Image 1 (cartoon, one colour):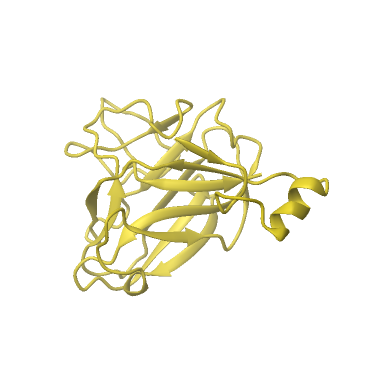
Image 2: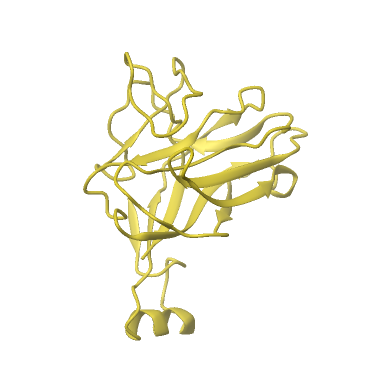
Length: 196
């Protein structure tokens, strides 16, 4: 886990200085850096969700998430869009959309793709995730934590729960997510969130 004092993860810039010392809330970046392997983002199963649920006590509860960064690769001839959300299905905030042809080919650690078109005030059990948009074709890849289910704690923070694994998951159940009969419903990935 890594926590930074600014959204950029380094020294305060002029923009950040005004926020940090001008009475506004200081932005915090929280990252799950594990993700040394990739998992295919298969468009034939477009309702797979890749992300985390935020449980009681998570640092971003009652804060505002302003950006989510996922680490992706274009894959082989992938086309179409991937969108990121915060909230729960039916009342989630769409944080942005990326055309997979623009995210870049395979590189160690993945290409950081920032979704920051909107903001979302976090409630307990909200989820941040991404998924394929309708009509996407050919696999892209996400860097993921690669644990086999059932997984009940997250290396991002012990107050999140990740859902997903390397084999026997029943992806397709939209957030809000639960563990049902030992099956898991989110695929845990390398990610950074910024909140204030």
